[in-house]
Length: 84
Image (cartoon, rainbow, N blue to C red):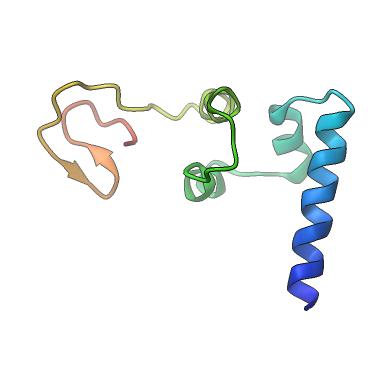
């Protein structure tokens, strides 16, 4: 139950942050989000593509845009070394 309450609190804080007009980057800064944490969270379906792109840019995540991928290892494209 405490975990659900903490999750609800974090969601409401994030919503409040956004409703005040702050960017997703400033929210990431406010929560102290690290690149390693972002890499674990970046495939969440709840984020808009432009918000995801903003955080990828903030953390300098190279995203694979290859049309022909020779292979993927641990989520990394073996053609361009970008995240898939």
